[in-house]
Image 1: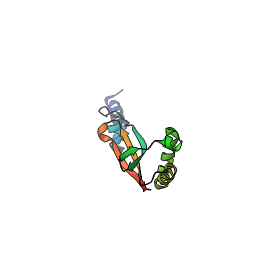
Image 2 (image 1 turned 45 degrees about the vertical axis):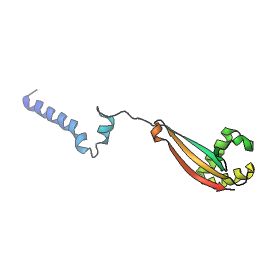
Image 3 (image 1 turned 180 degrees about the horizontal axis):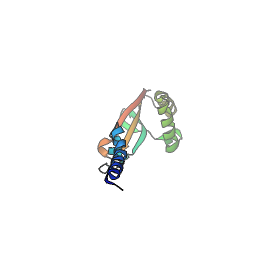
Image 4 (image 1 turned 120 degrees about the horizontal axis):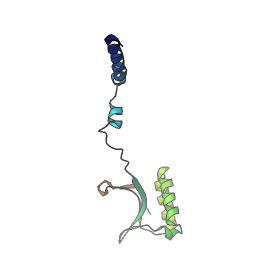
Length: 129
């Protein structure tokens, strides 16, 4: 092979090697899969829906066994009502089954993260009987 053919082959290989980088419009593939990329980390969150009852003597967690429901079935109902945006209706029905006057029912959404500093508590709905 002559020197001119070697140069042509070298130039063709360099052009073919550099074309993907020339046509690249975003640096994301290099950052995501590059040598110095950070590993992908998935943060898991757990959510919990709790009903609290506020009475004269303070606030306490509602026990689902008071209305003859297991805790797992009650959590399923809470999630179902919450994601259908019917939390107030759930609290009204629970209050009618519980038969306590002068009490306020609150539905809390508690988000538990791996890092305790990222835990979050949100009052979703309330109902006063």
